[in-house]
Length: 313
Image 1 (cartoon, one colour):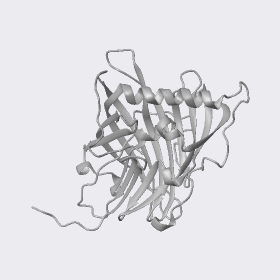
Image 2: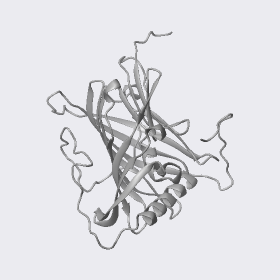
Image 3: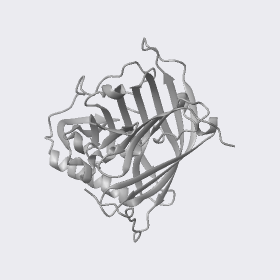
Image 4: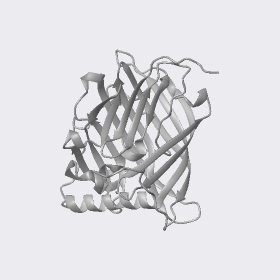
């Protein structure tokens, strides 16, 4: 039996330079509809974890976390090594599954956070490189309750792809500054600020009502000095988008090592994400944590083709 549905306002953030999204948010006004879901990783312990988050969040450029000026930072070397780690990740990892816990709190006009709602999902991610060098990322979820719906009928997707900021195919459109040697969980980590240069080549595009809005981001990353793994990312918008009332999109992502069950191989994946968003009158704080990872590797001789007719720019 077909059930009539009311209007929906989808907001999608996509990889603009290829037919893939990096991050997705959809707002469903009809509670009977069945939206997609959100993405992120196992448990995370961030250096400045917030037990009681405040609204609004601290902007990434409000202050620079303390760093040491010695030893000197070689930005080209840091970026090259981090980019290589991301290339290895997308080459070695075909897919992973996890249990996803979503902690969601609405925010009222005064900035007060409501009581938290929680949801749990079986989460599956497919990650594959194409011959063009661009990435293909797909996410699937099955909810334990509420017919696979997220709290407040707001869906968030794509966090596993955010680290592609440092992939050589996408890094060319970012300006980077090495602020010095900081710390992540007491480990030495290079602290790198980044910002997109050209809106026409923005990594993220917002698609709403048939219109495309380029979304430029800026942020800061902590890259481990010994392994060059990206351990933490924080991002904010370069500019708000008044046309669609996108006023705030602040995200922080923690990464952690995940081991293959029968080998000593370690892969760094998102372990938790915090998201603060103000869009079309929806204001909320959301935290995702991931546990119970299962990893699947790609066969060495496997080749993944681009869709028919696709040409890399």
